[in-house]
Length: 150
Image (cartoon, rainbow, N blue to C red; front, side, top):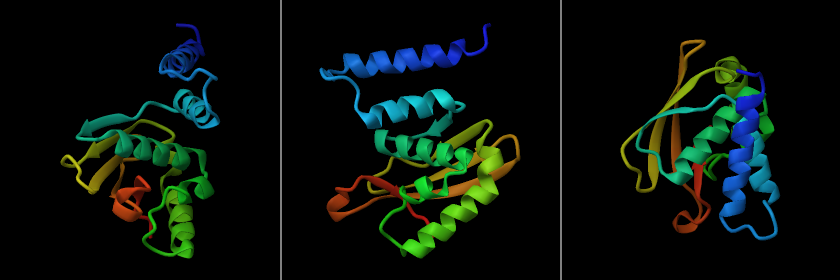
């Protein structure tokens, strides 16, 4: 297998899917960022019962950990807790799990969520385990899925 081909193939497939989904003016910046993240990181192994919002959120958590991006990880926090708590937790999570997030990771999603879900991340290279608490945030869940970070 030629190095780089799987990444290029994944990137091309993801861009094609975005374009076929009806984006007449082309993919948005957010869609392009997602495709770049998806192609630039190892695939997340998944077990259990994710939904679209929870799966996407957990992927971003793992990507931000792997990239050492505490500021981008902090932006995924729920409204519960203070900005200082979010900042401190994000920095600690990156410090503690960055190495493991760079390799193979399995996310085990708990039961089908209504407004909360527990996800257990297993970092295969380091043997670490991190439990995440996901919540629908905002009024009646209008802000989508976010992570409890404090």
